[in-house]
Length: 174
Image (cartoon, rainbow, N blue to C red; front, side):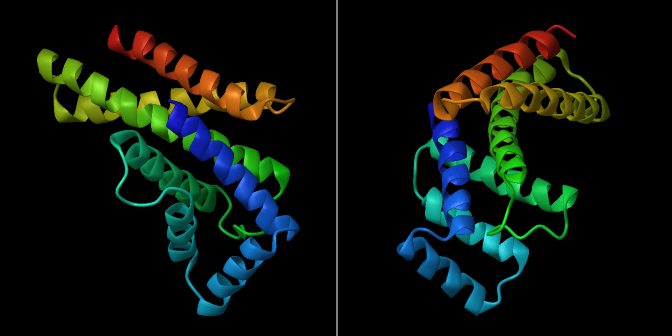
């Protein structure tokens, strides 16, 4: 989960810097993205590619996927959000979503084996996975609120590991 925590922290730091406009290199990159007139989805993909390049390890791919889903989730929750002008609360939420989706990816792998072994019907599997995602989002968001006081990267790693362990314990036995 270290990669997930680093990805979430990098995303938060990058978006805060982009919003504040205090790094000339990032400012130039943001200006080039804006000039291209990309859609919100394409802009999100550009951000993800900048922070987690293609061709990495399984952990990096999971973090990429989680970051992409997190940004999409932000846009679902707040359709008018400007990714380069997010509030601190929006950035914190985006970081939490990134960790939550990465934890969810890992839970899916583990529970998938359990569901296969127990031969659950596809409808039951989908229902349970939906419950898992909802649960993970709540756990990670609560933990993120506590972590915002300081030491976010370390706290993000701890949040991710605790959420993964908690979700596996709760949902593997149900």
